[in-house]
Image (cartoon, rainbow, N blue to C red; front, side, top):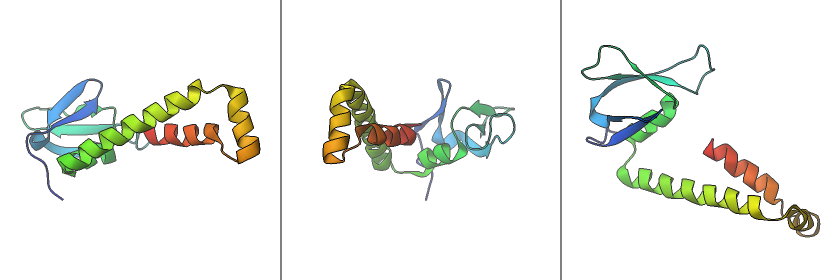
Length: 117
């Protein structure tokens, strides 16, 4: 595991930092619950930036390869399209598929939504 230099890392809230300028990442555990936000210390700044992403998500972006990041973006896009497509299928057809074929598209869309959250 190593930092990928020169990559822009999203902190959420429209904030991006260079991966090689991140000095530390700490989860914010008070206020909004664990795993939701993080403090990110950046070289050259006196105070940390508040990120709307979890420390795990930021660290994964920092240490993952460019290929892994590209694959994750593609997978995220596929899941978003899947959820959107299922939402457009009439409820009656979804119910018939569930009752006759055992295919629960609502459950599938809910699981995909959890992954995207």
